[in-house]
Image 1 (cartoon, helix red, strand yellow):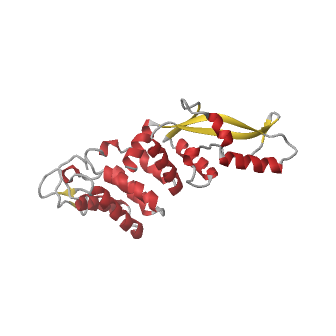
Image 2: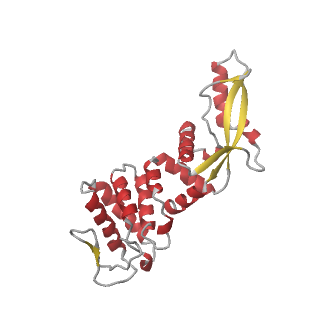
Image 3: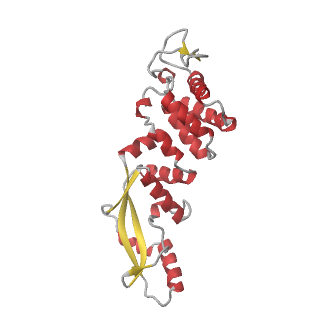
Length: 254
């Protein structure tokens, strides 16, 4: 069904031909009617549901739809609603279901539905809750982020596993630094951010050498390798959100 078609607030899913039957025409849908349409579409395609997860998603989407003007609520596109509900029905992490809920609600808003890219469903499916934490932090900073590849070197060689591949004090306190680095790499793989060699203007990358986490790791490795004369090498990197990533974050975070 064309998501721009006039539909009734009392519309229901046709029993045999997957069409919506309307008794009166208007563009605004109640939040309940719009969400019921999405769930009815899903049941038509996927009768086996994980009901507990969908019940939770239902509540989350209701909250998001309550933020949308009633006259702007439209019926969802099956191409977005069906795979979103399918993925959300097996999502075990609350933070991931929240992303699905926000995206589905935006897909039922006539002011934002055209910005919903089908690839966003796959992107959420390939993230975990910790990835969402790092993504939200990047979105919150809303600027280029200095990050470094810190290595412990001796002669023309370097030690493996001394530091995570990417480290930045902007993520301090969010969890294990190696876990943070893996999330940064995953967000880059998903094309939500760019990670490239370069510098953020006016940021002193030499400060990385004296940061507590770097110093602590260096001292541990120097103690373990007391026969080596280790030095700290810093390679400058920058994290920037892609245009694709900005749209995704605006739709699924805010």
